[in-house]
Amino acid sequence: MDYKTEKEKYLVSNCTPEDPLLAELNRQTWLKILNPKMLSGHYLGKLLEMISCMINPSQILEIGTYTGYSAICMGRGLREGGKLHTIDINDEIRDFASGFIRKSGMQDKIIMHTGDALKIIPMLKGPFDLVFIDGEKSEYKDYYNLVFPKVRNGGFILADNVLWDEKVYRPEFDNDEYTLFIREFNEMICRDDRVDNLMLSVRDGLMIIRKKEADL
Ligand SMILES: C[S@@+](CC[C@H](N)C(=O)[O-])C[C@H]1O[C@@H](n2cnc3c(N)ncnc32)[C@H](O)[C@@H]1O
Image 1: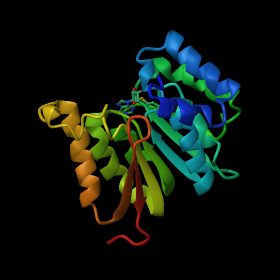
Image 2: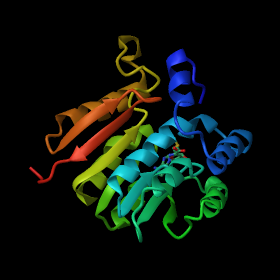
Image 3: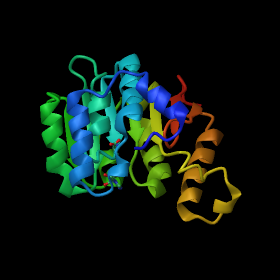
C-alpha cells in the first residue's frame, strides 16, 4: 500500500520497521500474486499484531488468509499452546502462504483451511478470543452471524475495509453494490446491542467489535 499523505508517511516512519520475513512476504506478494493490494501490509499488520499481543488469545479465527501476512502478524500474539485458524477459498495461493508460515516458525500454530468460509466456519470449534473478517465483502454479514456464537463473551471481532475506499459515507456511491454491502454490515453492527464497536480510520477502515460479557 502507498502511504500518500505526509501524516501517513510520518505514522509509518515512526513505528517499528517491517521485519525481514514480512518485508519479503510483502515483496514476493507484489511480484508474484494477483491483486497484491489485498495484502494488509506493514501498518495494519503491526496494529493486528499489537491487538493480538494485548489480548494474548488462545484461539484466533481469520477469514481470508490471502498470502498469510495478517495470519503471521496475529499469530505472534498467541499464548503458549494457542492456535490460529485461517480460511481461504483460493487454493492457488495456499502453497505460497504456507511457505511463509513455515518460515515464520508458526506452522504448528497456524492451521490453514482451504475452502469456503461459509462452509468451514460451522465445522470449527470455538471459543475464539479474536476473529479477523477479511474475506469477500458481500459475505461480511454472513461471516459475522456464523462466527458470533463461537466468540467468547468479552472476545473481539475485527473487520477490515469498513471505509471501502472512503466510499461508505459519500452519497455519490449510493448505488454502488459493494459500498452498499459494507454500509449494511456497518449498520448491522451499530444496531447489534450484544456488542460495543469502534471504527478506526486505519488504512481502509478497521472495525473493532467487542462481544459484551453476557449475551442479551
Ligand atoms: C483481502 S484478502 C485477505 C488479506 C489478508 N487477510 C491479509 O491481510 O494479507 C481476501 C481473501 O479472502 C478470500 N476469500 C474470498 N471469499 C472467501 C470465502 N467465501 N471463504 C474464504 N475465503 C474467501 C480471497 O480468496 C482472498 O484471498
